[in-house]
Length: 206
Ligand code: SAH
Image (cartoon, rainbow, N blue to C red; front, side, top):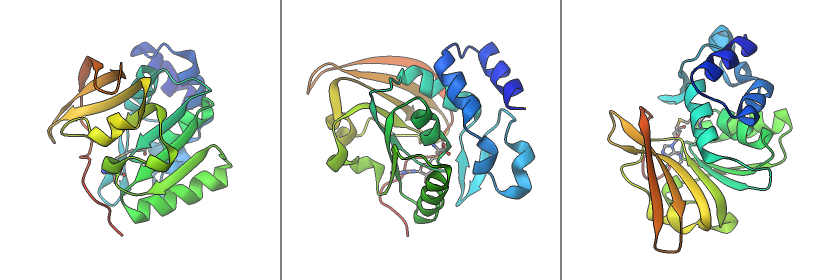
């Protein structure tokens, strides 16, 4: 089933072998409630509780490919959710810091990631709008919730030469943006296709 899903992704334009290989390794069904495991290798988003979703495999693949992750990268992810995307980044060799604002999801993802044995992932309970200053600066930042604009603190915490992939727009649809930081004040912005993410919300909830 995993192989079939990856063939579909390749047909839809995911050409980076390293992304497909990482997604082949990470068992997406373990991020689902037991009753729904048969849904895990369909190319769809799926509820993970707390009104949130695990992103569609195509979306994970698209964002990861755009981020051009290198094994030497320190990557910040905003929106841990199930933890699946963080594991895909870690499988590509990156050191991953991932932030979740919902305590239930944070705790669940933290435990699952530990069980799976990923030692290069740190799960942080916090508000992604603040970033993770103790771990900054980052080579790459990946935002997996819909932002109204690029959060200034995330731009600050990106290295010069670093890349941020972030869906920016309203609650109905967002443009995938690739931001390359050129200096403390200057950046290059490339606009990609439209996606629909759950919103990036301020503050955290216990
Ligand atoms: N990357 C996830 C899917 C993300 S869904 C996966 O692989 O499963 C978006 C997640 O972002 C949700 O879990 C939501 O609670 C979280 N989120 C929304 N706003 C946030 C914020 N300001 N800081 C941290 N997490 C946030």
